[in-house]
Length: 80
Image: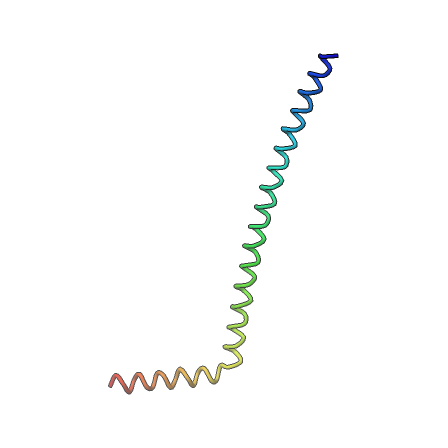
């Protein structure tokens, strides 16, 4: 009977060790997945901002061109 208990204890200890190992691996995998998703969402945010800025530049193209022309004219007058 004692031999069976010892075998059971060893088996139980191995199972607990394996379960702890799997839990650590799962936690690390979840952390990596979370960080990966954050990086992807940051990239999407940057792309959306670029698209919005380009869209505004296209919409207000004439006004921007007049503004930069006026600035250029004033700089040229100031220089000489």
